[in-house]
Length: 438
Image (tube, rainbow, N blue to C red; front, side, top):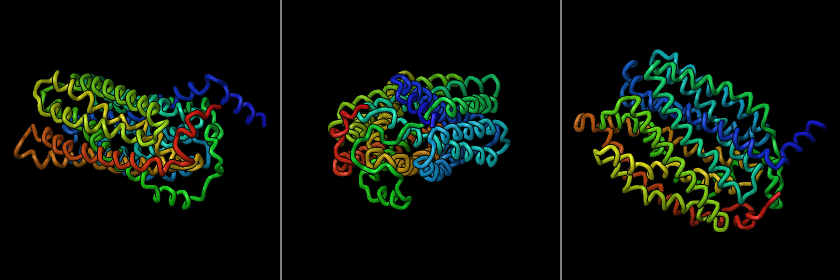
């Protein structure tokens, strides 16, 4: 009884939610460090283990996404019924441990299995984090709160690229995996011991029961929601570009612009950081500013971004001038993450507080199956097909073809989702929640 009272007292402290936000941000950052580090290490791994572009694509996407997408849903069902912070702590320990094991792999299949393990661990990271923060921040602050943790995408990716590249340059690619993985293992106890579990739905006074629904009832709600599918497909096609390009652009810079491993790590790390932070700021700010009164703008913001970003991305891939290419890549890189916070807010508000984690997990299942599972593989396979004709520039043309197809498709899905969102919003439009304060 005293434990419950002390827990509630800690949760209610005005500044404590920012401690939680900081720890969730660290959790999210390490998630993307471990996910992205293989991109900068792809060339030395390929040279030592004698892998094709297709095999590299499987390691960078499918090997991770297979179990990441599959395990996320049962873990989310568990998180809707038990401690989210404990699941997050175990998750970071598992994915970090398998990241360290990648450093001892001696062939393709060993590395493939260890990347599967990273995917299993990371399946318990994102959905519980989103759900947890929704019980620490009221609706009119959630877009910005999610934008803060979503900034872990570019920061974690940039750190993975820069640290991975620098460590690999001096100590080899194996030590890069081991050092990053062991650091994450040390963070797991902090998540377990410091974060407190808040009451679910504490800011959502919409007169709905907070008890967990039956599993099949929850899935029926997800499957029957048009906005869920349109948002998921929009984010999924956009994620094919984000993750596919995130894996292959380091190799593109080395092949088409003749950069060294370390120079590539610094250049691409800077690109990911600048573009990603810009995208998170724009997505979080516009999402809260416009979407908190008109829900359709949670989808319209990324739709407009993809329309604007397409010609810039094509130009960045086409030019041979490296500084100009870097400048042109910045906004397309922002497009990859601009949807993270507004779409994350929208998906959570398609279901009740008791089903929030499962809605997010099902959304991430579709997104990661498309983005992580297919992005790097499709780009790698297309590069192999074009290699005979374009040689070292085959990757450039592979990236151009995918950009020209996927950017317009993502924009269309988001635009259709925007038209539907006001009808699917749980408990009414978000302006009924925007002033909810505790």
